[in-house]
Length: 268
Ligand code: ADP
Image (cartoon, rainbow, N blue to C red):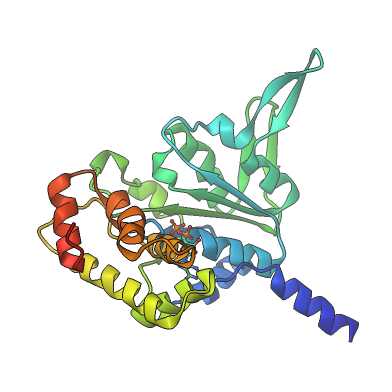
């Protein structure tokens, strides 16, 4: 009886994630085999949620780092800081995951500075090492360490591509926006919205995603649809919700925004 209750409680701590293929099996296999994993796919399609779901399911800590163009290797490995007049070494999130076990998830890894790949390479080969030059340590990753990175191959920025020498060190899984039924289920589960309005949001996304000849850097994401549904649930008027959650986040260009409104039937 007690075990059943414990299982139920443990289940509640696992963030909701709706599978769209065999990604869970691949993740579990990569985990068991101590292989690093690369998640490719557009922004807002569920990559981060997937990793938090898997970490909770496996019962290991998750260290998530959103990479940006100022992020250096020291931000991941650690640095000496002055505390109470003394210089002390403070582990960064990657070092913490290697030292104590856990999953380190580097979101949008291509955004990070080049020196980051230098610390990642030895961790992705069989020896799974993290050399810390500053402390003189050579950390060996434990069995319950896993490196997961994500990147968005859709960005048309050649400078921001992941180098083949880095990419080929990872098992890779491609993500995309879920099919209409799954996306509807996600929106309903995330916001409590009714099936009719969830279906309408998914249809709107479908119309935008199939638009060609319109210069959008990114397609409308599941995340934006969840935002739209959240506004509708807070009784924001339909057109305003669509504008704030979908049109404005997608573009700053007046013509493009007008084109989007037309495509989804909101003329303002
Ligand atoms: P990414 O990391 O790909 O940019 P996220 O994982 O942050 O995207 O997803 C954004 C939001 O979309 C999540 O917070 C969640 O509300 C929703 N979402 C997208 N796909 C799924 C899914 N398959 N299962 C559950 N929620 C999802």
